[in-house]
Length: 105
Image (cartoon, rainbow, N blue to C red; front, top):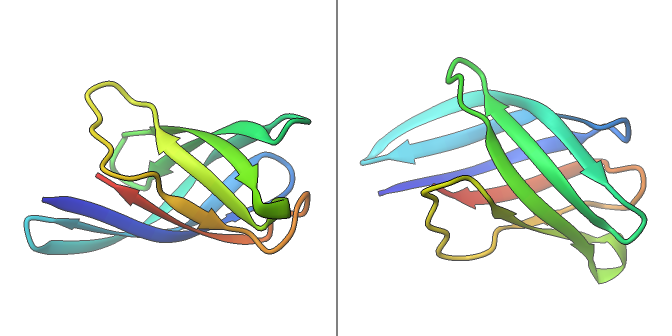
């Protein structure tokens, strides 16, 4: 079984940075992550996140909800089974300050 939780910052210019904690069969690792995001005028967007040293990029579709206080995201990579839709909290849009995101692996 695998899970991921992390905190990322969206800089308002399309860049993502942060850290994620990964668990896989009881082993825990912490990785820096970087990536990019988009968001259109209807609050729909995408995230691409790459953990440092993995060479793997994870892709998500996103929608901003709750008056800009939350972001719902779902992984869109092939062969991905998502048990729940992860939730990311952002303090205010369009600034995109720190966001906390959980992603089931």
